[in-house]
Amino acid sequence: MPTSPPPRTASRTREVVAATIGTFFEWYDLLIYGTFAVVISHQFFPASNPTVGLFLTLLTFASAYLVRPLGAVLIGQYADRSGRKKALVLSAGLMLIGTLITGILPNYESIGVAAPALLVAARLLQGFSAGGEFGSANTYLAEQNPRRRAFFASLQFSTTGLAIVVAATFGFVLNSVLAPEAMNAWGWRVPFLFGLLIGPVALYIRQGIAESPDFEAGPATAHPLRDALRHDKLRMLVGAGVVCAGNVASYVNIYMPTYAITQLHLPPTAAFAGSIAGGLVSTIFPMVAGILADRFGNVIVMSCSIIVGIVIAYPLFLLLHAYPTVGTLALIQAVIGLVFYSFYYAPVGTVLTQLFPASRRTIGSSISYVASQTFFGGITPVVVLTMIDVTGNPMSPGIYLSVMGCVGLFSLLVSRRMGVR
Image 1 (cartoon, rainbow, N blue to C red):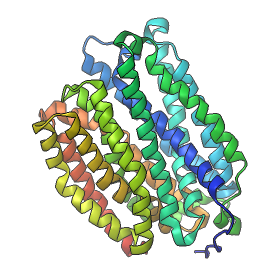
Image 2 (image 1 turned 180 degrees about the vertical axis):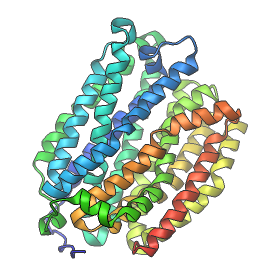
Image 3 (image 1 turned 30 degrees about the vertical axis):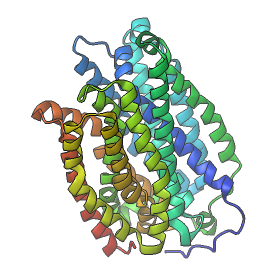
């Protein structure tokens, strides 16, 4: 594996902003869709049974994950072959197009079946973009300083937490000031249109950044995918296992506003208040986890966190149903954000960079991350809704979190035997 070049002495502010603003844009759009899933179901999937409409909306949310592997492969290869910077520009541009389509798309009443069809097309385009976004941004950040990989990689996860806060704040404010009729007519489009202001800024900033030090040190491989499949199959599988617990927890938190409304029968403003609490925790504490991981090692920090998460996941939902209040909801989402997201998930980025050499680091990280997202992450709301419907147990999200936590812990211990610290 090539030795990393010495860290740059110049300010990395522009590089950090360039990598993280695209991540914010990606997650903000995904979160807005999840946050307004109930309203969107009325607009694009009218059905006599509200559960069916919501189920179709969540399936559309999950459809983006069908093409994430393709985006991970194509954009990941592009990043390893042509540079991290070019891949970051490409993914931001594609995400912008998908957000534009979603924000201006007429509803089912106006154009019939074309509305859900175009909505699915927009989600697929965004899924393709997001498939390459994580690997490119994570690799770019982690390669800025080999002695502070975990901290720099954690910034991407803090940015995601900030996206949670902004998306949930939109949900809280709009549901507070708009009547349900206005929300259904046009209010749900406002946050999507706000996202269109972010996309051009992300493109502009990314076009002016320098390439990452590790990529410049080279040499780049001409066939990163072929080489990764030849040498790194087990490492990609282990990487996907490490990622799964964190991304399942992330999507449980994304689903919580819908869960609070449909299962706890809380008003929308209360549901979004919980997401704001979880988002604030997920904005601040990933950086703390990154600092600790650089000092004590990723495996130690993540193992301690996920063991706690496995133990407390189900009791958290028992507590929530015993006391279904705004305060309890905010507490539960904050704890999930702290344990599963900040101290387990945030160091995942640097674990993935340690699993693969620089010449195929983006493609390996992208496939690991997106494979986990495809099979575990994006379908989490659908899985949880199905578990609740089949078992009649509204605490099912806690069971799912604990099971995925066990998978993550086992994979993390295997990664340690592969040289991850």
